[in-house]
Image 1: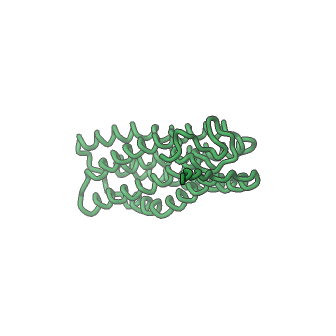
Image 2 (image 1 turned 135 degrees about the vertical axis):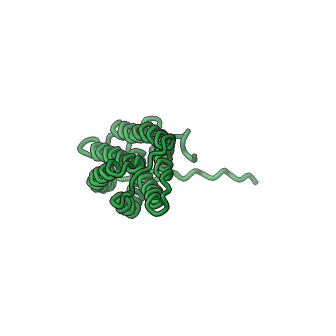
Image 3 (image 1 turned 90 degrees about the vertical axis):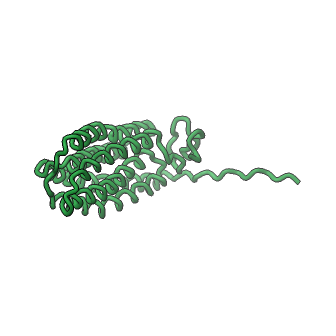
Length: 236
């Protein structure tokens, strides 16, 4: 007796009202992120300049880039663009591009600091900022990625990835700053800068490809099935 192959279970398509409600939540979270990133970026760059810390300055620039990603998502879910597949695709690419803005500057400055043995000053302000980001950013990142799965929005998923990246980098930054403050391990600062650059490139590539597209969506995305999944990307 032959056994038929199991039928793939497709993600359910959201109703318009539910999609709009979830989109509103994403937009609100992006406004919250924008406010925090503005504060975080300004404080990090100020602390980095005062201490001569490339890792802190890089972290501040990363915050500015993440703030721009939040602006893109707010734009994506405003007005008629809420149900626009074209706006979703454009937002996905723009969010992914933000990662590539960070890597060259931070990578170059970090290598320069390692080669010239530039020792940053101790920055307790930077330590406090990094500790705060370790707590706040995972909350925003996880919430956005969960909403992205429900909305079928690679752009939102990319912004959530940026928030999680910020949390990981804040933790690495915290280790570097504490190492310099407590043990004089100055090399940890540019080493963290190189880590920031490398991770930014990886996350940018994943966001550009729209990894995680196999989620429910009412949008008629080009080349996608009704649930927003592309046959050549599902199951990766």
